[in-house]
Image (cartoon, rainbow, N blue to C red):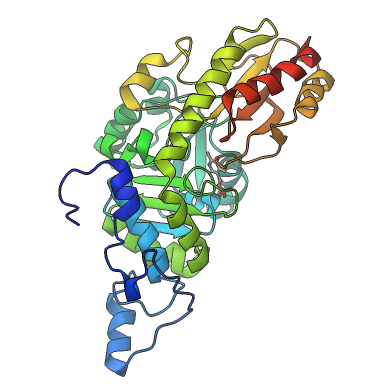
Length: 389
Ligand SMILES: *Cc1c(COP(=O)(O)O)cnc(C)c1O
């Protein structure tokens, strides 16, 4: 197939990198091997020295054909030269940050980012002399003011996955590049189908592929995408030295899931919009944090940067009594109580948050709308909402 021409997402998702039909198999086989053998010692030495990332694979810690297939498909979707898959999303985020810092570096990070990234910056990396500043991120000037001479990385997540705040990726990436600062973002919420941060100037685009990309709640996986030069360095250093790779079977499951990514995302988005719109009109709710609602405070940025939303959003009940909030979550029958999201099943999590800019701690309820029917999810919420009276 000619992939140099413009092709739609779903065509790429079905076929990119899958031209070679090994023994005629329509789906790629799983290369479940830890190492590769060579006829000649010279060939092995050449593979070790010159092709750590393939095409001549020699050891599955650094590269493997099953992993490579999913990596190349995700890089194609993100519009980056390369991608490296990791054992989970957090590994991808840690690796991306580690690849941009050395002793004495400073990182500017949005305070609404994924929680363990905040722990990495505030509790772990200071051991190695890496400092940080957390910013709200919705005002560009605040990000500029946080930059210091020793800043080497700016870390973004837009929208964030609890309170759904956005940053202007393009404006921040431009400022960073003028100062030689690397930019990293967590693109898990959007998937490349709804936003391609590399086109907006972001250097390293990361994913928790445990979520939409994996889509079936049966794997944990992560991805870091960027230029060949940056990814080669990550393979030589963080991947080779820290490990945390994705294994062939998980990579195969991930590629299997990518086939239906666009279909699933459309359904999550439509259902998420219906449920959020319904909740937005309810008297029990103070505010619904869903990026595609007309009432979303950063609507212009949403329309400028993104091609769609999804099934994940949160809301703030007027009643802030933790007992009532938890009773609501407990009364749901289709929405199950659990962390994570992006799979087939609807999930709920209730927790207190206080991002920068909030004057007090607030209980929020985060919903993930799975692939069930929207009217059933709404009926489920309707039958539990009296708990929030
Ligand atoms: C889940 C998640 C992560 C972490 O991914 P794991 O695969 O659980 O390690 C990072 N960022 C976001 C936005 C997430 O939702």
